[in-house]
Image 1 (tube, chains in turn green, brown):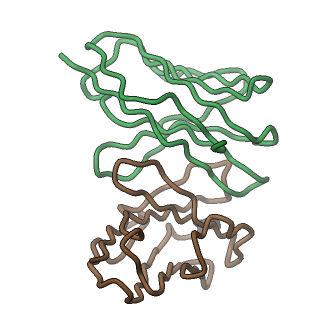
Image 2 (image 1 turned 90 degrees about the vertical axis):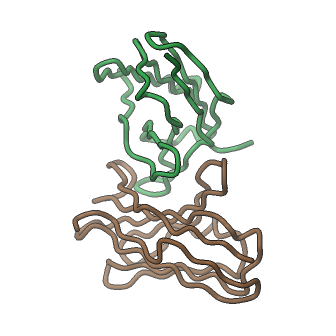
Length: 110
Length: 114
Protein backbone atom coordinates (compact mmCIF):
# COMPACT_ATOMS: atom_id res chain seq x y z
CA UNK A 1 0.00 0.00 0.00
CA UNK A 2 1.33 3.45 -0.89
CA UNK A 3 1.94 5.80 2.01
CA UNK A 4 -0.20 8.53 0.44
CA UNK A 5 -2.90 7.60 -2.08
CA UNK A 6 -5.02 9.89 -4.19
CA UNK A 7 -8.05 9.63 -6.43
CA UNK A 8 -7.03 8.54 -9.90
CA UNK A 9 -7.47 11.26 -12.52
CA UNK A 10 -7.91 12.98 -14.76
CA UNK A 11 -10.87 15.07 -13.73
CA UNK A 12 -12.38 16.97 -16.67
CA UNK A 13 -14.85 19.63 -15.53
CA UNK A 14 -16.51 22.71 -17.05
CA UNK A 15 -15.75 26.19 -15.81
CA UNK A 16 -17.75 27.05 -12.73
CA UNK A 17 -18.00 23.46 -11.54
CA UNK A 18 -17.23 22.28 -8.02
CA UNK A 19 -14.71 19.47 -7.84
CA UNK A 20 -13.42 17.44 -4.90
CA UNK A 21 -10.18 15.50 -4.52
CA UNK A 22 -9.62 12.84 -1.90
CA UNK A 23 -6.49 11.45 -0.35
CA UNK A 24 -5.71 8.78 2.26
CA UNK A 25 -2.52 8.30 4.24
CA UNK A 26 -1.19 5.18 5.90
CA UNK A 27 0.74 6.50 8.90
CA UNK A 28 -1.56 7.43 11.77
CA UNK A 29 1.32 9.30 13.40
CA UNK A 30 1.49 11.80 10.54
CA UNK A 31 1.29 15.31 11.96
CA UNK A 32 1.01 17.72 9.09
CA UNK A 33 -0.71 17.71 5.73
CA UNK A 34 -0.64 19.89 2.66
CA UNK A 35 -1.96 20.30 -0.84
CA UNK A 36 0.53 21.28 -3.52
CA UNK A 37 -0.16 22.26 -7.09
CA UNK A 38 2.06 21.30 -10.02
CA UNK A 39 1.66 22.83 -13.46
CA UNK A 40 2.84 20.92 -16.51
CA UNK A 41 6.65 20.62 -16.54
CA UNK A 42 6.95 22.95 -13.54
CA UNK A 43 7.96 22.41 -9.95
CA UNK A 44 5.30 21.83 -7.25
CA UNK A 45 4.17 24.82 -5.21
CA UNK A 46 2.27 24.94 -1.95
CA UNK A 47 -1.45 25.53 -2.41
CA UNK A 48 -2.50 25.28 1.22
CA UNK A 49 -1.83 23.55 4.50
CA UNK A 50 -4.54 21.32 5.97
CA UNK A 51 -5.61 21.87 9.56
CA UNK A 52 -7.62 19.59 11.81
CA UNK A 53 -10.46 22.09 12.03
CA UNK A 54 -10.60 22.45 8.26
CA UNK A 55 -9.57 25.60 6.47
CA UNK A 56 -10.63 27.72 3.58
CA UNK A 57 -8.72 30.00 1.23
CA UNK A 58 -11.02 31.71 -1.23
CA UNK A 59 -12.50 29.06 -3.50
CA UNK A 60 -10.43 26.28 -1.92
CA UNK A 61 -11.41 24.29 1.17
CA UNK A 62 -9.29 21.60 2.79
CA UNK A 63 -10.54 19.07 5.32
CA UNK A 64 -8.75 16.52 7.51
CA UNK A 65 -10.32 13.46 9.12
CA UNK A 66 -7.73 11.88 11.40
CA UNK A 67 -9.96 8.97 12.42
CA UNK A 68 -10.30 7.87 8.81
CA UNK A 69 -6.80 9.09 7.80
CA UNK A 70 -8.40 11.05 5.00
CA UNK A 71 -7.79 14.49 3.48
CA UNK A 72 -9.87 16.34 0.95
CA UNK A 73 -9.65 19.42 -1.24
CA UNK A 74 -12.73 21.15 -2.60
CA UNK A 75 -12.50 23.69 -5.40
CA UNK A 76 -15.58 25.81 -6.01
CA UNK A 77 -16.37 27.85 -9.12
CA UNK A 78 -13.42 26.32 -10.96
CA UNK A 79 -11.46 28.49 -13.39
CA UNK A 80 -9.48 27.58 -16.49
CA UNK A 81 -6.37 28.56 -14.54
CA UNK A 82 -7.08 25.82 -11.96
CA UNK A 83 -6.01 23.22 -14.54
CA UNK A 84 -3.02 21.48 -13.00
CA UNK A 85 -2.04 18.40 -11.02
CA UNK A 86 -2.93 18.51 -7.32
CA UNK A 87 -0.63 16.68 -4.94
CA UNK A 88 -1.59 15.52 -1.47
CA UNK A 89 1.33 15.58 0.99
CA UNK A 90 1.81 14.09 4.46
CA UNK A 91 4.62 14.61 6.94
CA UNK A 92 5.96 11.25 8.13
CA UNK A 93 8.21 11.08 11.20
CA UNK A 94 8.44 14.06 13.49
CA UNK A 95 10.06 16.97 11.64
CA UNK A 96 11.03 14.80 8.73
CA UNK A 97 10.00 13.13 5.60
CA UNK A 98 7.44 14.75 3.30
CA UNK A 99 5.62 12.12 1.26
CA UNK A 100 3.70 13.07 -1.86
CA UNK A 101 0.77 11.27 -3.41
CA UNK A 102 0.90 10.50 -7.10
CA UNK A 103 -1.25 13.51 -7.92
CA UNK A 104 -4.64 14.07 -9.47
CA UNK A 105 -4.85 15.88 -12.77
CA UNK A 106 -7.56 18.50 -13.19
CA UNK A 107 -8.58 19.92 -16.53
CA UNK A 108 -11.09 22.77 -16.52
CA UNK A 109 -12.75 23.33 -19.89
CA UNK A 110 -14.57 26.44 -21.19
CA UNK B 1 18.32 34.72 -6.60
CA UNK B 2 16.47 33.83 -3.43
CA UNK B 3 14.99 30.54 -4.56
CA UNK B 4 16.21 26.94 -4.64
CA UNK B 5 18.70 26.51 -7.44
CA UNK B 6 19.50 23.22 -9.14
CA UNK B 7 22.20 22.45 -11.67
CA UNK B 8 22.48 21.37 -14.33
CA UNK B 9 18.96 21.98 -15.58
CA UNK B 10 19.39 19.24 -18.17
CA UNK B 11 21.84 16.36 -18.34
CA UNK B 12 22.22 13.72 -21.00
CA UNK B 13 24.60 10.92 -20.11
CA UNK B 14 25.59 7.55 -21.45
CA UNK B 15 24.53 4.41 -19.66
CA UNK B 16 27.17 3.37 -17.15
CA UNK B 17 28.51 6.87 -16.49
CA UNK B 18 28.33 8.60 -13.12
CA UNK B 19 26.42 11.86 -12.70
CA UNK B 20 26.33 14.47 -9.96
CA UNK B 21 23.34 16.72 -9.42
CA UNK B 22 23.59 19.85 -7.33
CA UNK B 23 21.09 21.69 -5.17
CA UNK B 24 21.57 25.10 -3.56
CA UNK B 25 18.77 25.58 -1.03
CA UNK B 26 17.37 28.87 0.21
CA UNK B 27 19.84 30.37 2.65
CA UNK B 28 19.08 29.43 6.25
CA UNK B 29 16.80 26.51 5.41
CA UNK B 30 17.74 23.56 7.59
CA UNK B 31 15.70 20.88 5.82
CA UNK B 32 16.51 19.71 2.30
CA UNK B 33 14.72 17.04 0.25
CA UNK B 34 15.42 15.11 -2.94
CA UNK B 35 12.66 13.58 -5.06
CA UNK B 36 12.55 11.76 -8.37
CA UNK B 37 9.70 12.28 -10.83
CA UNK B 38 9.40 10.04 -13.84
CA UNK B 39 7.35 11.24 -16.81
CA UNK B 40 3.66 11.31 -15.93
CA UNK B 41 4.31 10.02 -12.41
CA UNK B 42 4.22 11.46 -8.91
CA UNK B 43 7.12 12.52 -6.72
CA UNK B 44 9.14 9.62 -5.35
CA UNK B 45 10.88 10.44 -2.06
CA UNK B 46 14.63 9.76 -2.14
CA UNK B 47 16.22 11.33 0.94
CA UNK B 48 16.01 14.30 3.25
CA UNK B 49 18.53 16.19 5.36
CA UNK B 50 18.16 18.01 8.65
CA UNK B 51 21.26 20.15 8.69
CA UNK B 52 24.00 17.93 7.32
CA UNK B 53 22.48 14.70 8.63
CA UNK B 54 20.22 12.37 6.70
CA UNK B 55 17.83 10.72 9.20
CA UNK B 56 16.06 8.73 6.50
CA UNK B 57 17.77 7.28 3.45
CA UNK B 58 15.12 4.64 2.86
CA UNK B 59 13.99 6.15 -0.43
CA UNK B 60 17.29 5.74 -2.24
CA UNK B 61 16.50 3.15 -4.95
CA UNK B 62 19.81 1.30 -4.84
CA UNK B 63 23.39 1.55 -3.65
CA UNK B 64 24.19 3.38 -6.88
CA UNK B 65 22.51 6.43 -5.36
CA UNK B 66 24.12 8.56 -2.68
CA UNK B 67 23.69 12.09 -1.38
CA UNK B 68 25.52 14.43 0.90
CA UNK B 69 25.09 17.90 2.28
CA UNK B 70 27.79 20.17 3.60
CA UNK B 71 27.78 23.40 5.57
CA UNK B 72 24.04 23.01 6.05
CA UNK B 73 23.84 24.35 2.54
CA UNK B 74 24.58 22.78 -0.83
CA UNK B 75 23.65 19.17 -1.46
CA UNK B 76 24.77 16.77 -4.18
CA UNK B 77 22.98 13.67 -5.38
CA UNK B 78 25.29 11.21 -7.10
CA UNK B 79 24.17 8.38 -9.32
CA UNK B 80 26.84 5.87 -10.22
CA UNK B 81 26.76 3.58 -13.26
CA UNK B 82 23.59 5.20 -14.57
CA UNK B 83 20.88 3.02 -16.08
CA UNK B 84 18.10 3.99 -18.47
CA UNK B 85 15.52 3.64 -15.70
CA UNK B 86 17.29 6.48 -13.89
CA UNK B 87 15.95 8.89 -16.52
CA UNK B 88 13.66 11.33 -14.72
CA UNK B 89 13.44 14.83 -13.32
CA UNK B 90 15.25 15.11 -9.99
CA UNK B 91 13.68 17.74 -7.76
CA UNK B 92 15.22 19.36 -4.71
CA UNK B 93 13.26 21.28 -2.08
CA UNK B 94 14.17 23.10 1.09
CA UNK B 95 12.20 24.36 4.07
CA UNK B 96 13.11 26.50 7.07
CA UNK B 97 12.66 23.99 9.88
CA UNK B 98 11.42 20.75 8.44
CA UNK B 99 8.24 19.20 7.22
CA UNK B 100 5.83 21.36 9.17
CA UNK B 101 6.57 24.36 7.02
CA UNK B 102 6.30 25.06 3.31
CA UNK B 103 8.83 23.29 1.12
CA UNK B 104 10.16 25.34 -1.77
CA UNK B 105 11.21 23.48 -4.88
CA UNK B 106 13.88 24.09 -7.44
CA UNK B 107 13.08 23.70 -11.11
CA UNK B 108 14.70 20.29 -11.22
CA UNK B 109 17.38 18.53 -13.21
CA UNK B 110 16.08 16.56 -16.18
CA UNK B 111 18.33 13.51 -16.50
CA UNK B 112 18.31 11.43 -19.66
CA UNK B 113 20.35 8.24 -19.81
CA UNK B 114 20.98 7.02 -23.35
